[in-house]
Structures are given as C-alpha cells and as structure tokens.
Length: 229
Image (cartoon, rainbow, N blue to C red; front, side, top):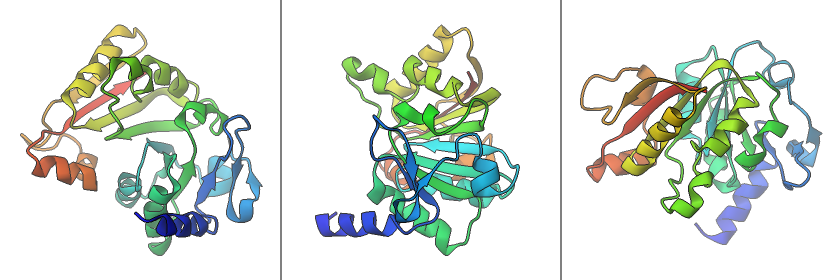
C-alpha cells in the first residue's frame, strides 16, 4: 500500500463515528471524530451502543473482517475490533458504516493497555483470529494467548467469559494449549486441530478472513480453541 493511500485512510477514520484511537500509550485516552476525547470505559453499552447487549472484542482484528461478520451473524450482541494499524481498521469500519451496522465499533490501540478502555467485567467474550504467532521464544510474551495477556484479559472479562483462538500455526496452537494447561484458572472447553475435517462445531467458525482463505489455499489446517480464564 502506498504512503499516500495510507495517509488517506488515516484521514478518513478521523471522520468515522465508529472508530476511536489512542495516540499515546503513556497517556491512554481515546479520541473520536474530530479528535474529541471520549471515555467509554465501563459505559460502552450506555454511551456508544445504547443498549444492554453483551460486548465481544476481536483482538488484532486487522481489516475487521471477523468483527463485521460476527456483527452480521449476531445482531443481538455488540462487537469491537481492536488493532494498532489504522489503515487496516479502515476497511472494516467503512464496511460497517456502509451497511449501517449499529453493533460494531473499532479501537486503534496497543492491546497491552486494553484495561484502560474497558472496566472489570465489561467484556463478555474475546476472539483472537490469526494474530502474529511470534515464533521466536524470546518474544513468547508478545503472543496474544500468553500468560502475560491472560492477566490483561482477566481485568476486563466477565467471570466465565469465553476466549476463542482461531489460527493455522501448529506451534502457536500448541503454545496456547500448554498455557491453558499450566494455568489453574483456565478451563479448556473445546479444541480442534482441523475444524474443516468434519462439520463445524460452531456456526461462527464458518467466517473466513482473507488470511484464512490464503492459508487454506496453501493446504494449511485451521485450528480452534475455546476456553475460559
């Protein structure tokens, strides 16, 4: 993508009413349209969605394909995609606006500071779809299913709230299972190393991002883990 195109998308999302951004991790505050500060922490349902429907986050959402498709499939739930790359978020945010989906929002921030934007128990579910697997052991803490991030999720997730992982990398998949097994607070509910080998266990697994389609075309198997933390 050209620098001009990226800058154009950054400018666009400043006008999108469904996108909120944090520009400084040292001062974790969100701004919306026109760079106006917003504080939805603990009040996303009341102030943004204006309903009492449960909130699901998609972390490292990329272009927001899973976020938008989940919102289409479950209109009785609210969905927030989170990613650091504004030019990626642009696609999903624009799609949601064009389709007038009221149950979708996006937050541009680092996931390491997520607890500043959601209150304890405010989030019902978390989806992690095809994140960077960080294959080097020296970067294991950067994996979104690491013990470090589980502690972050516990700060915002409801008791018994679900965490979903969908990925193609066998090492990342095994790392996730090992992390769950090593944590006495975690409870593994379902796991499948090849979700398309049989009938899908859950309808939301049928959603395919561009990356997933590429992985399937390359002959890779798609894995899924459902657990509580």
